[in-house]
Image 1 (cartoon, rainbow, N blue to C red):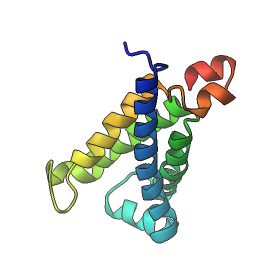
Image 2: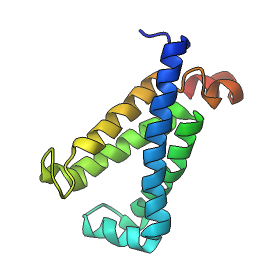
Image 3: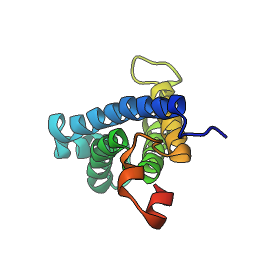
Length: 143
């Protein structure tokens, strides 16, 4: 196992958190502010997502807030795990039928995001995350 408190590993996790969190936050912001929540619900409905009135806004805010939390390194493990589920859902419901590469949105990009989120769920935020500074006791072990 890699010691995530070593400087190189800690910086590596910081880079992964900032880039991946930024991507998730941008996609969430797009769903909330550009497409709007009613537009996101309509898009989720058209993609065949279950309960689009719930899942559309839930995914939009998960990606927006979850991305920000990843950048900060706060509640990293549970947030990252939720984002893994988000990307698996996106792959299965939207991208799988497009193939791995497609101008219409293949599944390679959500698969990479799922893999990075899973890595963060397994390792945590590392030395430069707020989990270490803010959380105490059992909450710190879960994050």
